Image (cartoon, rainbow, N blue to C red; front, side, top):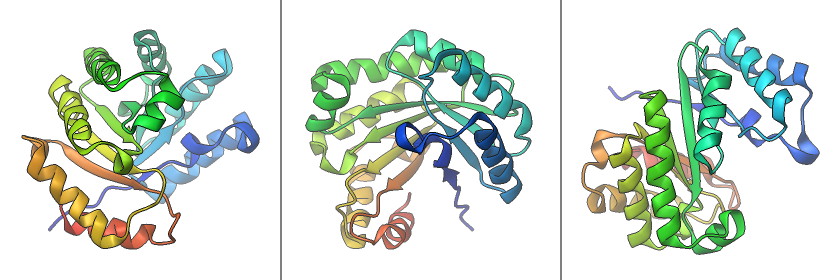
Length: 219
């Protein structure tokens, strides 16, 4: 019997015009914990001491779920994020880097070789603090397939215990999604040794069907 794990990204996705108050963030975390989600994801720290205090408070009130905190793109951000969530029952450091050319330029202003090296550095730094390290490839479905495989392999070799591939644009049909997952297992040696997850946008209104297809394919 297989186990499906659910990570909730509500808190990670709320910012800017959708910003929540401190009280709202804590209450949402409490509610998700009571609902029994496996993992609650937090955004990268962007608002200084307020963000750190929010993470620390959430870490103190979540009693069952794993708490996955996104880190920034520097080694210093890894350390700061760890200090904000290390008191959680099980804290996860979450590295999120773009995999497609357009997102690499837009989000990080870097080329593929620099992103590959950054993935190794950040994962290794996170692994210094905890064995619970997650890696997400943003916009993975529009990435060059060869580079995506290199990126996933680099994160896994550096110590990530889970890897998530993101269909950020929501462009896949269920059949394409299943084929995509199978192709990763075929192309990345040792991928079966880490937990492979999917994060699917609903641009075509088929995210649920794609998720089911990905699970059938081994995610």
